[in-house]
Image (cartoon, rainbow, N blue to C red):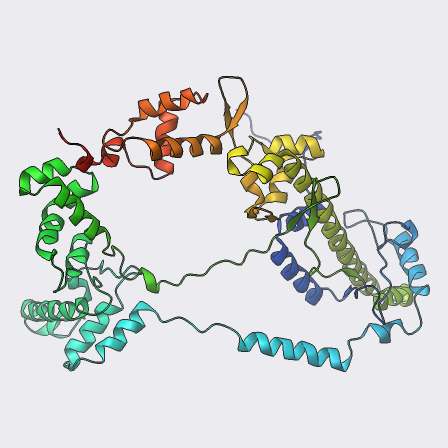
Length: 507
């Protein structure tokens, strides 16, 4: 093989995303709250951006990006470093001449407005929720009630702060023993044995704290710790937990009855009592942050009883290019190249953001309306009436690429008469029924749950039997599909669903 250096020309076709296109896709993908944060950040970074005051108020500025008049459009340039900005400069200079003389002074916030904003920020800080008490804080507070030696207290604290969010101690006690010079110079084995006994004693103290079951090292130990004095069934429940917990989980009640001599009725009653215990005693202290959901889209019915999409962007600031920088462009005609280039780029960036927001509004409206028009039966009749829908169908209907639809619905929520749903909720796969009609998988799951709820619990239906029952309703699916959805819906197997107490002659 010959190696050599040289130059050659080659024609190739490839797709390169311009910065303007990338920004447009990013803006489209943002939900309403993230969009507001992005606008606030852009206003801090770009001095050319200013807010449009609500129309009709005294001192409202002139909105300069009205699409009805091409002569008043903001700076629009071609992408690239070598673009010619001269025509856009002339257009911006002419726009600045049409503004009122006292425009800059009127657009400044008044003293009263600044004070009102400061009061509003103070109220928001005052109404912030305090940090909830953690499990470690709760246990540490209880530990202060005990009269313990310093060494034992330190070991108990070490155990408390080693618990996981569910209240379990996953680390072996040997790992909690602190290092000591004794291990280097003295009897290391004696030291570790002494510290291990101290850790066992400290663990016993922690396990007697509230909530019951905390400090357990396994599910079995957690349940046993909750069998406190006063429970009339504690002895029988202890027998089931210690020796037959896997059999209980798999509903092998006849086997338990054979080994323990208890009747199936008694085992069922004890199993119900065991279910009342908490397998995760520390879960109540876990920090639960419920995400704030703000709908991007609202549905309203028009005079023809048709669902019409309305975007919730009232809190989204309307932007325009600052008139101060328009005037500065006129004055910068003789300035150095770096100053002119800086102003050009900032004004250009502001215009790109304004147009990207407007493009987001248009695309999201059209995509949402197409989705709503397809799923009208779902909105009227409920989840059982949802129809199969793919993103490609909406893309073809709106006339955009399927990835644009994906970005438009990503993390967006819609307020409907039936509640708030993510827009992705309306995209579902499906199958074909015996009559050749499309049936959404959600409908299959609803029907599957209905069949399981109505079955005879003494003789629950196997997956093969569930396939036959679905076929009677005109839904032909494979057995593996039924198994898949049964597991996804947390429906136990037929053996686990069997009610042995209802079976007079259990096998």
